[in-house]
Amino acid sequence: MSLLKDFKNSFKTSGKDLTMTQYLNLCQKDCTTYISPAERMLKVIGEPEMVNTKDDPRLSRIHSNKTIKRYPAFSEFFGMEETIDQIVSFFKHAAQGLEEKKQVLYLLGPVGGGKSSLAERLKQLMEQSEIYVLVANGEVSPVLESPLGLFNSYKEQLEEEYGIPKRYIPSCPSPWATKRLAEFDGDVTKFDVRKIKLSISSQLGISKTEPGDENNQDISALVGKVDIRKLAEFPQDDADAYSYSGALCKSNQGLMEFVEMFKAPIKVLHPLLTATQEGNFNGTENLPAIPFQGIILAHSNESEWETFSNDKKNEAFLDRVYIVRVPYSLRVDEEVKIYEKLLQHSSLSEAPCAPKTLEMLAQFCVMTRLIETENSTLFSKMRIYNGENLKEVDPRAKSLQEYKDFAGITEGMDGISTRFAFKVLSKVFNYDNDEVAANPIHLFYVLEQEIIKQQMPKDVEDYYLNILKSTISSKYAEFIGDEIQKAYVDSYQDYGQNLFERYITYADHWCQDNDYRDPETGQQFDRASLNEELEKIEKPAGIANPKDFRNDLVQFYLRHKAKHGESPKWESYEKIKNVIEKRIFSKTEDLIPVISFSTKASKDDEKKHSDFIERMKERGYTNKQIKLLTDWYLRVRKSN
Image (tube, rainbow, N blue to C red):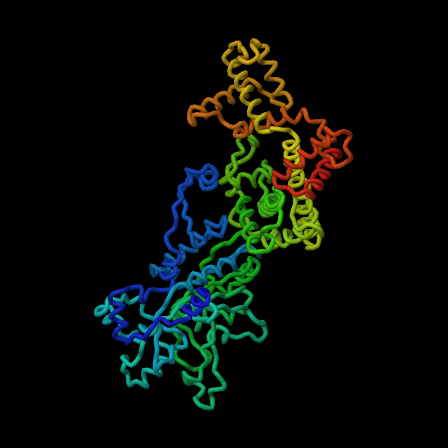
């Protein structure tokens, strides 16, 4: 029953209305009673967590060892630190009464990039705040206006007696309040004040508007219009004949979201100019100005923005827009987290997903969003953006800042959208009629078909398919080959570590020009014998300069042991990892009879096949996926 009680309690009002005197005395004691929407937004966003990226190798490469801010209120927006920082900066400057206070917060980005999700989050945060509104005869002001608007002509006196800074006084009272004040013969104490909680569902302080039909849309969607049902009772220019139903009226002291703002005709946007600059706007009738103290949040795609901004007639409006770019994620790890979050909110959260499925999709999407750079592969650029160290893998790879400087600020504003990617992922999970699961092979097929269905320009389609087939598929073939071979080789990790330790021992004695005697077998190795043993490991990996390679590896090993007090893992150093894997897998030509699903020639092969299946299942694959991926790998291997 606690749920039902909590539900009922959430609808309780905040208590008895305050008198005007009580309200002003409260303002004198507590400044949060009258603070601006931007200040209330900052309060609910809260203080950021300061992250020193020096302590994390990946983050230090991405953020150049800077200390970055992370806001718990936006914890589910992965890889959007810069965007969120700009949004918070807008509210911070607006709260200080700077120019941002008079501007529209405009999120500019591609489709499916997260603009709407950010807008929803900002509305949810605003919903956590409370405001004080004017009440007359038990009726709340239809524009949720601050009681301080009544004292617009007494700003100095209000600041002197109650300590309320002049910048918090609204530019004017509403027509409704002016009429009530006349009815009260100027006795402001006959007004009451009510504390209300903002609400998205009830449109209390938070509203949403969208562009309508271009032929018949007018400003009434923003400013309201006359209520024809009341014309029998009141004149057309009477404050009580007016319906304060516009989005600006509903969002006073709160937040108004304008979806796809620049798809609306310019005449519809005019009220936003006076609402932001002067703190009030005019209705459709001959009424006094209506106050507005809220935040206007707008968003649209880049094509609408370019069309609007290229029109010189819109210069006045362009100067009143605070642009925050919301590009696609350009980091693979963060893109994967977005998919995982979306899956968690669906029934697919428990469905099997083969290793690397989400990562392959993320790599493909990120690569379509990146701008190609001269003398560097797109795959290396993607890995650098993801915070990886390619010093030992690709010496031609540039630094992250070099890539960014070359690409400019528009990078990430084009390419495959996260929304498109998730629709592909949904089809991948449901591709097999017998098993709701996802794997990279089905992903590649569905992705190719969906790209073709989009009917993109031929050059774009060919570019995307080339990334998919020549890069993503080939990289996955390498990965699944390693997976299968690791599952085939018994005690893979132990074998690799033992080989690593033996190699280091041989290399250390060789570098020091010392003979080595094996303590277990008693076998004696001179420098020539040590060289032969080392070459057995190095040659399959194609090591061009073994002398430097051996010295580098021994130094790495000794530094690690001195610092951590234990030997490094053989997989911790990319160079030796590749060498040892080549050594292990160079002896696995007999794996085909074991891993294939054909009839086995002997019980020994049958036993090895069963063990292989079990080790693959431990790695996260289902029985059906093991057969599919193994068959695919054998076909790729044969074709190569």
